[in-house]
Amino acid sequence: MSVKRLVAKKVRISDIVNGKYFHGSKEEMKPSYVITPFGQKISRVNLIASVIEKFVSEDENYSSITIDDGTEAIRVKVFRDDIKILKEIEPGELSIVIGKIKEYNEETYISGEIVKKVEDMNFESLRKLEILNILLDRKKIIDEIKELSSKMPEEELRYYAKNKFGLNEEELEVIVENLRVVKEVDYKPKILELIESLDEGEGVEISKILELSDLPENVIENAINELLSSGSLYEPNPGILKKV
Image (cartoon, rainbow, N blue to C red; front, side):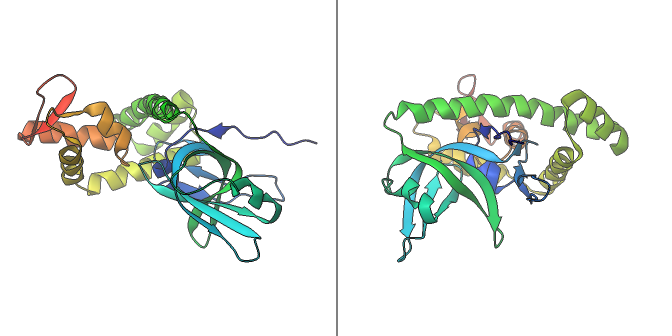
């Protein structure tokens, strides 16, 4: 019986690194996967990122590159005959990477299947916009679950979320865990620092903050609302933020 190849999903590296890893099983033909803070279950990925480091072992049986998409960095590893995948790839190049999510010694990495140099720089911007639109849809789910968490018992919330959004127990658990962590951490200083670093004089678009931050969108939105209410931020124009 042939095994259907899983779709390589387009995500940010930060969503992989900050997600929760689940080991697969060869006996059960179950792949390993990560559930992101947004509740996305991902086994294979399709990434566009810059190569910042490359390594080849002396016996040429192992090679790796470290890639960074502006949200986080991760290693892509290949072994034995597959080392040819990285032969033409060099640091400084923008590349598309397709591969499986793996974990070893508590390091989440990508087992490379396809790695190619990206010639068209516009492709990176289009990819970021595509991922942003996906995350905005996921954000609506997270926001509704967050709002309902204060209005109904957890057992009832889980039943509702599973039926309305098609979430399984693992996906829902990761979302709930992430919401618990978010409540305990004040991310406003980090958001302020990001806005200050991006502001070239005219302010910063909210979409740019959502794109570049490695925080969940609901965290960013809540922090921005609090900063606006406290007077630390203001909007010189709709959708534009500027530090006071």
